[in-house]
Amino acid sequence: MEQNSIKAVTRHDIDRIAALRTSIFKGIGKIETAEEEESLIAVNKQYMLELFDKNCFCGFYDEVEGRIISIALGVILAFPPINMENQGLRGYIYNVYTDKGFRNHGKATMLTQMLVDELKSRGAVKIELDANENSIEIYEKIGFKISENHMVL
Image (cartoon, rainbow, N blue to C red):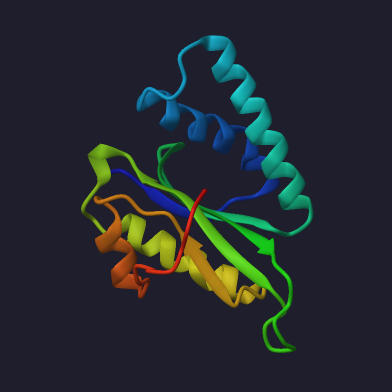
């Protein structure tokens, strides 16, 4: 029987998290060469380590037999304070992913909820994410709403 284990991302996990994140993008055709893959792993690792050391990076993953099968990552971003109750900290969730063989068991929903709780505990007063058609239902279960006033350039 497979043993799985939910874990918080630690500094020790960053190498394999950066590699996993890069492999996700490689799998959808966003990375074309081995050199690009290697460079992106290094850039992701540096990004994650810098934010981790500032206590602004967090995440959770589920593991089966040493392999990450589901993950949710997040960062704390600083925006200008609005008032004393809203010091401008926002959470951003990204790379919520579950391996195809383990989908439809609530793993992404559970990890995302854990991540929301962690981001709030670190002071995030607002939490944002970008969703695709396949993930909207997951996020709505947690309480996210589609924003009508968000613009991108």
